[in-house]
Length: 87
Image (cartoon, rainbow, N blue to C red; front, side, top):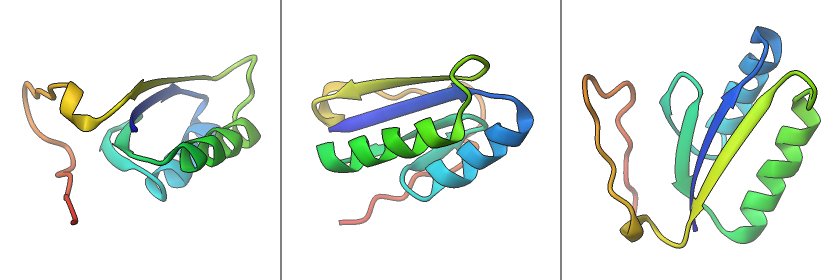
């Protein structure tokens, strides 16, 4: 599955989310991550996110696609972080 995760959190937890998500997904912008995951990896990431956020103050939104082939990715402006593809 291909996953896109975006978040809005207070700065202290936002930094923790940034560090945590960079370990598992490709960082594409300040609070936007994407990448290919298995279902079990995605469940583990969601569990990790729940341990970091305060669900009354922070927001994490995720989009799940069956495959990277089913979406188109566009950029207007600069690419903040090149995504490497390893096979």
